[in-house]
Amino acid sequence: MRRLRVGVLDLVTKSPNPSLYGRLMNANLASIMPQVLGVWCEQEGHDVRLVCYTGLEDLIGELGTDLDVLFIGAFTQSAQLAYALSNFFRQRGVVTVLGGPHARCYPEDARKYFDYVLGFTDRAIVSDTLRDCRPHRPIGLHLSAPNQPVELPTLRERWKFVEATLKKAPAIKIVPMIGSLGCPYTCSFCIDSTVDYQPLGFEQLRDDLAFLLTKVKRPIVGWHDPNFGVRFDDYMEAVEAAVPRGAMRHIAESSLSLLAEPHLKRLRQNGFQAILPGIESWYDLGNKSKTRRTGLDKVMQVADHVNMILRYIPYIQTNFVLGLDGDMGPEPFELTKKFIDLAPGAFPAYSLLSAFGRAAPMNLDYQRAGRVLPFPFHFLNNNHAMNVRPKNYSWTEFYDGLIDVTSYSFSWRAIARRIPATGTAIPKWMNFVRAVSSEGFGRIKYHTTIRRLLDTDASVRGYLEGETDVLPEFYQERIRRELGPMYDHLPPGALEHDQNAYLQTVSEEPELVPLPLRSRRAS
Ligand code: B12
Ligand code: SF4
Image 1 (cartoon, protein in one colour):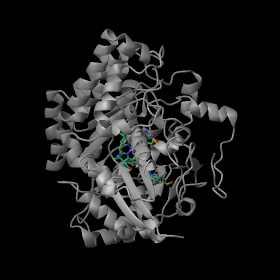
Image 2 (cartoon, helix red, strand yellow):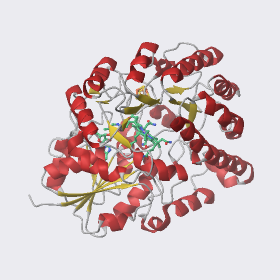
Image 3 (tube, helix red, strand yellow):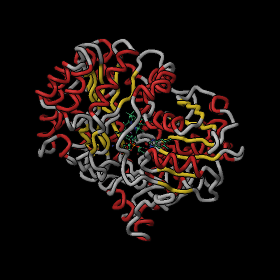
Image 4 (cartoon, helix red, strand yellow):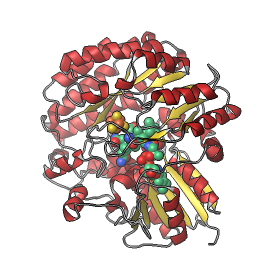
């Protein structure tokens, strides 16, 4: 086949002009799959231009409009930007392909704006797409491999893409790595709750780490495993075989149940600097924290555990989901404040309950109950909107609790207490910058605005109550401002989506099993 000019775009952010924290960190949030795509496309004999969009680049200038095909990797929060870009490039004769979390969660919507929408993506799917490579309009092809790929290219093969991306990180530079896909746990809100756990080769992992040491002095590795350390001993043996003690630092998302003291000792020996466990709720989802306790009992137990972790690992971010159905009344918020007091060194990250399309089986229940709101994708990043009406709270009660707990967590008192409770300089600095930047102060301000609008703007109240689908001006204006010039390239209808599409496809075709392009066309 002819040699194609392939563009690969990794949308790390949804709009230009990132915050201070974004300027420092966005390049460190790059995804692995766009780099993998780059390698696979080159191995298929094509020319690749990869751009990681951190909010500062001239996207169209860097990609060029002379492409044959453009792959875009997008989270749902970047979907509207991705749709606008796809429209822009399709009008110039480029075939477009969407992959990543948005494509997995909302394929039926994305097909309206892309020629191909890819779910699980392995080399065969990429190869099929490149061979077919032609416009599919008005409805694109939805393709998916039957399972997650069994192998990914080595770090050596990805390196030129990693290096180019890390040049954009001005201070801290984090190399993205992955050792497993899927997860053995079944947290009902999670995209991997139904995806089998599958380690990638530990031998390759060892070689990748050894290779990295030849490229960067004391590198920092960011593990993208959905749940790092499920095969704990195998991971540690791979690290210990490849890396002399003290020569590498690591960051990983792991569940508390995997972070018992013997594991922590070994993690410390091997240079783990930051760990991000999910606590989620004091009344729900106890399986992740390995506790059957709830309420204050759980707070005390988890706070002890977190303080113990901090004796071994300098930085810990504890993840919470607010608004779950198991929560009611002021108590969940009060308990989180208690936790902030008892574990002052932990950086709390709050996510608003979000139903990302077909990400998780639990979303079907929300859709059946008519509780999912049609918020434009642009707001679906766990913070800028909660697209599930809470079961046990009115919106004003919920936002009062949310503002209270966020203000408490990022009060000057809590910020000050976090400093001595963390041991080393970089964690102290990170906690401070995150608190005073968009994540702490920025969110207090944003949530306070929404709370005020609930009282003063009937269109916002009506939209959140599900009484109208007309998007309030506040949100419309925000998308216009945040997309900047790309707003004008949004195709008609691209701001709306059917929030119950998952339920409808399930009732129409009880088994939506991906089929092949020749053998794998999904729908
Ligand atoms: C690691 C991770 C992160 C890391 C790294 C992010 C990154 N750039 O990849 C960090 C911590 C930075 C992060 C941040 C966020 N994350 Co996150 N994250 C994950 C996690 C745990 C694993 C994802 C992963 O890398 N898996 C390994 C890859 C290889 O597998 P995969 O994602 O299934 O991808 C397959 C296909 O989708 C496809 N594919 C993937 N990308 C691409 C790209 C192209 C071009 C193509 C063709 C195919 C393709 O190929 C893969 C192989 O089949 C998932 C949860 C989970 N359990 O999956 C959440 C998850 C992806 N994150 C989520 C969210 C919401 C966020 C944040 C918005 C949180 C926040 N408020 O800040 C940010 C957004 C960051 C951004 N770039 O926009 C949601 C996404 C939901 C959605 N539809 O958008 C998830 C699903 C968690 C959830 N809530 O259920 N995250
Ligand atoms: S432990 Fe994490 S990755 Fe695994 S199912 Fe639960 S939320 Fe998802």
